[in-house]
Structures are given as structure tokens and as C-alpha cells.
Image (cartoon, rainbow, N blue to C red; front, side, top):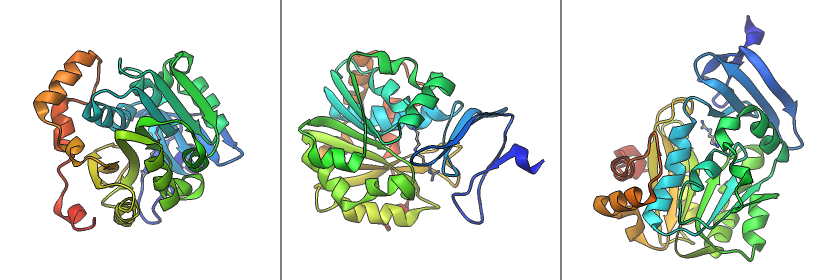
Length: 282
Ligand code: AG3
């Protein structure tokens, strides 16, 4: 039953497999191979170019941690930029924040947005209908180089640095993000699974350093990003943003009155504790 299993191809000698209970969509878009299928354990699963991007069952962990951590650290984010994020999960979480007045999402692949709206409706949950949202179909690296907009939080929800995602791990991209980030702003980005992709952590730390006075990483364990915890990059000009006190986060979280399934102010604080081998790599 080889053809009824999906084998992730991210690492040559190690990975995960899923039974494909039903293919909902499979097509080579203008940019990448997009598949959405049904799996008995994980619900609907979306992969791009052979790499699992999101599943219905565990998406809340990643989307909440990549959104609420920078937004609650900032405390009063009014304008948010999402780079990538075509499944709509980050958008849904950003819109839960009552301080947010304007969200711009720059996604290179329109078909990812359309097919995820259709086959992963629980990700976006109607977020695209919110009047605060503007969607731009285009290249994130061009957007950050040319935009007149200014943002309090920038969230890079990209694929791995292979294919269309590669440009979002370059010095040019980080320079653009610094340029359009307001004072007191935070940039965050998915940065791979540190145990499996430690080079990526080292490279990102190095490439961020000319543009951001403060760089670090924080972690979240996402079952379908296999190989250990996922490392999320954090960059800002203000080192105190990564160490906002627990009672401050608790007060902000309570005031926002939003519901989460993973994020808590306590998880937020703990996520910045990095193991020795990661500290040594950055
Ligand atoms: N973007 C991050 C996928 C990372 C997969 N990489 C990996 N397992 N090393 C997911 C998009 C979700 N909105």
C-alpha cells in the first residue's frame, strides 16, 4: 500500500509517514507542489514540496506560539505584517488581539490561500473577511524592501529555506524587516527544528546580527515538525522585550480576553530557555 502513504522528504534518512485516507487536493502550483489530504490521526494535513506544513490536530501549538509570544511581549501592537502564512492560521491568531488595527499578509502563492480556505477552513475561520486584513499576493522579500508601511510585529511563517522560502532567510530580507519595523517592534520567524537543522539556527543568528541589537530564539514542540522542538527566531532593537516580566504578560493576557489552547504567559516565559547546544551554536 505504498501509494496510500505520504512520506515526508525533508531529511534523507529520517522522517515521518502518514496514511493518506483521502487526497483532497494535489497540484503543482505556479510555485510549488501542494497537497492536502486526510489522515486518521492528524486530521487534514497540508504539505508543500514534500514537507509537512500544518495539520488540523497540532497547528494550534505553532500558530499560537508564533503569534502571541511577540504580540504579548510588545503589549500594544496595532499593525502586524505576516510573511507567508497562506493557510491562515497565523492570521486567525493575530486577529484575536483587540489592539490590532491592521494586518497585512504577503503570500507568494495565491493557490495556497485559496485551497486552504476551501480544505482547511478551521485554520482561517473566516479571518479573511475581517476588515482589518489586507492580503498581498507577492514576494515577501520584495515587499519588505519596498513597502511604505510600518509594523509593530513582523511574523515570518515560511517554508524551510529550500525553494520559495529561501529568500526569507537572507540578509537582504532581514534588512528589509528591520527597515519597516517600528521602534519597539519585534520580528519573529519559523527557523526549523534545532536538533535536525542547527546550521539554520547559526546562520540566522549571524545574518540578523547586523540589523538587530537583540537576537535570540524560543522554542515550541510541534509533533508534526519531527526531530525535537521547533526553533523560532526573535529579533528586536530592545533586549528587554524578550524578558518581559511574568506578571506583565499575565496582565496583558487577561486584558486581551482571548482564548488559547497552548499559549499561556508561563509557557511564554519558559519558551526562551535554550539548551546548551543551541546557545553554543548562536
Ligand atoms: N511553516 C513552517 C513549516 C516548517 C516545516 N519544517 C520542518 N519541519 N523542519 C508552516 C506553515 C504553517 N502556517
